[in-house]
Image (cartoon, rainbow over all chains, first blue to last red; front, side, top):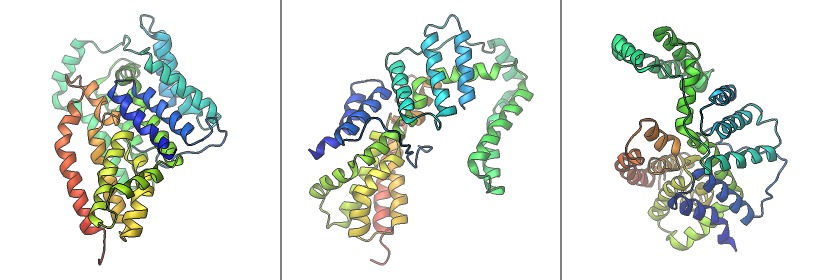
Length: 55
Length: 297
């Protein structure tokens, strides 16, 4: 089910509209997206997004 | 930054009347540890800290404390004495940043910004002569007022990275290909720009949206299929993303924190004021990309 990978977007929008704490919403969206895409939740390899210091 | 956060932690721990003394101290302390040792800690440990920070914020175990702020009489006396000059230290920061960026390009703007902040602090201390340690206390007051919003940008950057790794761009591209008439150059350009705005609004971060949307629409449809110039199209797509930044509460550092710090009555006042900039700018961007990004065609 490929569309499941968009679950993070749904969680961000719904979470925000329902007034949950944004940190909680972002964390939930990240975990759900990772699970949907079968990315292991624990990794020992370091990877930094290239835009980490930008907004 | 890490050391400053640990100083805030210490000041919070000494604030015995603080309602959320322990959790607030834990919040700034853990955040400071990530700043100082994040590169040496195993990623899973940093992940655990992120979860703890989220729990503290979501449980509302945060709040203002008691600060050793300058008394009102002192502030009024100083503002009478210096009038508009009280803003001079603040002006030192952009002036120093720009002059170092212009005359010492090797150091760059970020170093200039750091030096500017130090100069500004020294200037302010010399001008106003506050009590020793006052700046740390005022710093903690500001940090507490911003609260969890301070770390939202650092939460959003990995979310964008994760979206990219999870292949969200590819899914978006396949959906777009069925919805948008891909043969129409104008339609794909509009989809790229509007998509950038919407994704930035969701992720609060134009850079994260750019990775997803450019791999999803920008490269396959706008650049490969219609032959756009990557540099021109990319710049205009980023600018379209910033239209989303103007509209979203997710970009808390720009849109929510100032409203909180200025104690505005309407928490969304900043966003409402920006709508009339963002939407016309998006339309302009779409036409600019349509007319400028396709050389000789």
